[in-house]
Image 1 (cartoon, rainbow, N blue to C red):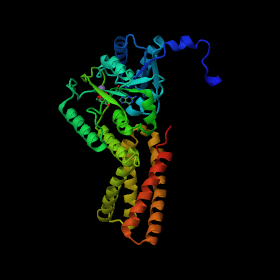
Image 2 (cartoon, helix red, strand yellow):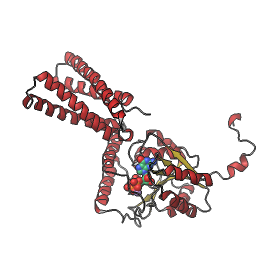
Image 3 (cartoon, helix red, strand yellow):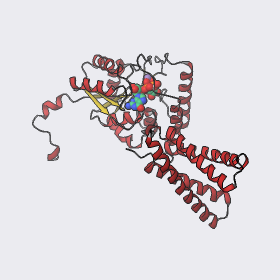
Image 4 (cartoon, rainbow, N blue to C red):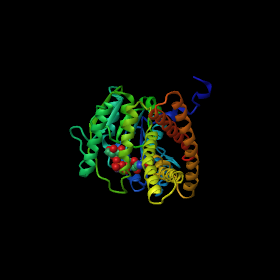
Amino acid sequence: MNEAIRPGPDSAQAGADLPALSVIVPTFNERENVPKLYRKLEAALAGIAWEVIFVDDNSPDGTWDVVRNLARADRRVRCIRRVGRRGLSGACIEGILASSAPYVAVMDADLQHDETILPKMLALLQSGETELVVGSRYVEGGSADSFNKSRAGASAFATGIAKRVLGVSIADPMSGFFMIRADRFEHVAPQLSTQGFKILLDVVATAEGKLKTVEIPYTFGSRQYGESKLDSMVALDFLGLVLAKFTNDVVSLRFLMFAMVGATGLFVHLGTLFFGLTALDLPFPEAQGLGAFVAMTTNFILNNFLTYRDQRLKGFAILRGLLAFYLVCSVGLFANVGVAFSVYDQEPIWWLAGAAGALMGVVWNYAMSGLFVWRKR
Ligand code: GDD
Ligand code: MN
């Protein structure tokens, strides 16, 4: 062993209470639930060397502060407070990678996941027969009675798509409750999407059937405190994840959304152009300019709400971002026209040249927007 990492004289004692299991709990506005979950874990995991890592995205209700206070009283509790970021999958990934335990579980903070099955999940992994254990609502004995009709339908529909398109064979790939061997997770981690919330589906699809998996049933409870953070946008996230995985990550979720927003911009542009020409009686160049201006503006707004909603610009930053976006898109237009011209020069096929130019434009706009408009803080 390298001298620098040789354990110090106290290590035998220090290593004695290393956790066998880390429970990763992503939180956003869950302050009432955190202490309740902690008590439940303590009871359920008696006799097991465990720790819990809460990953909080700087909740406005101060969830991280509640976690800190628990952590001061019990060293098995840890708090990762992330600032300037949002996202369930990203939070889970960071929490898991912050753990050094051989086994990690992911569960929600809101007491909807049944913590009493954790010891059974751990035993299954420790037996060596399996590498991933999924808490499943859709195998014999499991249920999601607390789901309302529309949510149950949406969940079943998404599960069907995931199974068909990605060839995922487990019954509940949308579960937010699972336990996995840490080394197996580390292996797939670099390929996972930090956006969205379907981390289990991502793990299973990325592992391409190479993870020995067992599902065990549990009943999805109902939330008592706080509210669900999953809005209608998660459907978009889900489709993006399926597409990205389906294309082997050639197209990222963000790029796809950016391109889709760009496509809506075309309609906005044409609509405004038409309006400028007919209703405002503008000469063509002015109407065309107006169309571009309005389309860039709506594109910016949509991107800020959809594509980059985890990094959404707010307040004064919106204005700065909008100006930067105009600039980026204007240069993108030159790139677009330049590429189209040179393609047309070689091969005078109008649609091929036009499409090549448009592709160049969207790739440019996307790359530069990521650098200058919605840059990571
Ligand atoms: N750090 C962080 N950041 N945590 C988040 C975020 C976020 O942006 N959004 C949600 N969470 C936390 C919540 O605080 C909660 O602990 C957990 O993630 C799940 O969020 P809910 O809002 O309660 O989701 P749900 O109950 O509608 O859906 C859950 O159950 C489904 C069925 O098992 C999720 O686990 C889904 O992934 C799962 O499909
Ligand atoms: Mn929930």
